[in-house]
Amino acid sequence: MAEKRRLAVFASGYGSNFEAIQKACEEGTIPNAEVVLVVSDHRDARVCSLAKDAGIPLLDFCPKEYPNKAHYESIIAERCEEEKVELICLAGYMRIVGPTLLEAFRGRIINIHPSLLPSFKGAHAIEQALSAGVKVFGVTIHYVDETLDGGKIIAQRAFPYEGNDIEEVTSLTHEVEHILYPETIAKLLQTNK
Ligand code: GRF
Image (cartoon, rainbow, N blue to C red; front, side, top):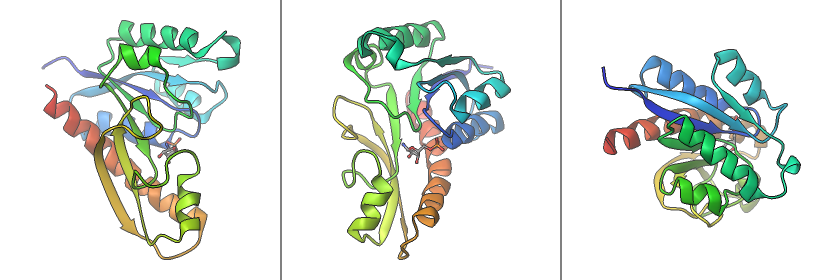
């Protein structure tokens, strides 16, 4: 059996996309891969407990304890290199990735965003879409570069929604995310053998 492909998941909060990725690795929907590191900038985030419960190495940190982003990102990059991480999957990581991490992992960092980019970049994408009155919502997976949610698009999935209930549309968005992210990771790993 070939060596497993090594993923890192970066998350700041709830971690439902981490759970979906981890489950997909365990069940083989993402074939022959494992999450070898979880990185979180919030020590009390649910995703940290999930990682601990699953026995996955966790790098949790408080950005304010470092003089600057370059400093903590060099620690993260070093740890990812030590863990031989092939692909970094941002999943609700609420920080802009800076040059230190981008240079170390160029072309190997992807993100999930809860809108059909290039519409509704930044935080609160679902609220922005609802306010704009759109009738088709969706999810985008894209490469991360220096721009905000502007890197090359890898995959998108749309769904119709005509209501006005933020909780309902958020939950529909998550359902799509939990399928699309593992599927896209599996395809990327398959393509970049
Ligand atoms: C997701 O909606 C994702 O698109 C966005 O942040 C949210 C994270 O949710 N970037 P979770 O922490 O994975 O549950």
